Length: 209
Figure 1 (cartoon, rainbow, N blue to C red):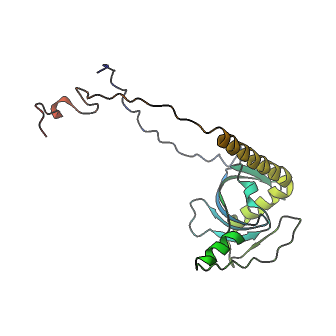
Figure 2: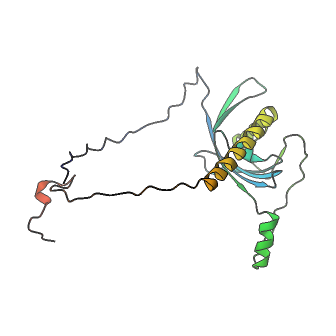
Figure 3: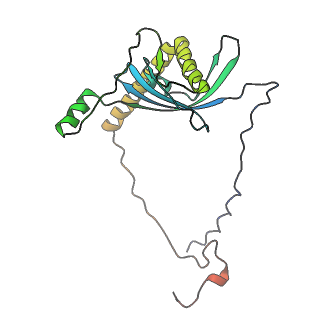
């Protein structure tokens, strides 16, 4: 027994509360939005956008953008036509759709795959189509603002994504060439005379159960 001192007691729980800025001044309150994006061949994306904490506000849309370019940051601002600034906290999950190769594998296993019908969208400029008949106004505005952001910053966003992909490929290549070798670990353990957190009266003497 190395006679180590007892560990300190755990700290009391911390209760934090989000406080919105006062409407009379300061920065505008952020709009929290959750987005799931399924990317088809880097050219079309199926979006589902919802305001945080608001049930029934999900809006579905198709976009002609590769929404993987949105995966490298968590917040952004857009200035509306009226000069008002809208701040967003973006929580996004992005994934690839079923590729032709995967669809062929599924078909070989007898698994049916019916690709979705993608509406016609132009190429060259950010565009989208909302498929809901009565979309939530704020969620629809968030989709519009994301496309406005891409109109202004799309080239930088695409380059940043390409840089992240390149860095990840380089990291994987380095790890393949230099696989980490874990060190041996020696664990020492012993029985304490007085277990931490238990009063002395609860310790039974004499080896009883």
